[in-house]
Image 1 (cartoon, rainbow, N blue to C red):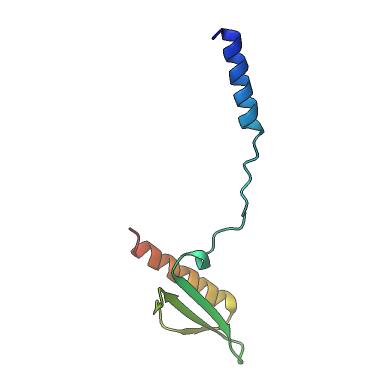
Image 2 (cartoon, rainbow, N blue to C red):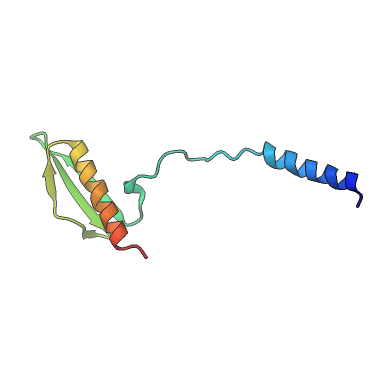
Length: 90
């Protein structure tokens, strides 16, 4: 194989690789709700508060608690899931 043939081959490979489209199909961020085994329920009550129920593999991960806002309940859920995942990493 001559030098000119080798250059032509390299150019064709580079053009193909550079021209590919490497877009991610799902660009949504990964949420703590997406982790396998976790079931997070934030339930609105009649009095305007929110109840957080958090299960892992069907077992309660934390006691059911009441929060003043949905954001507080979501934050508590995210923090609890993260603490649990870090404590039980393999």
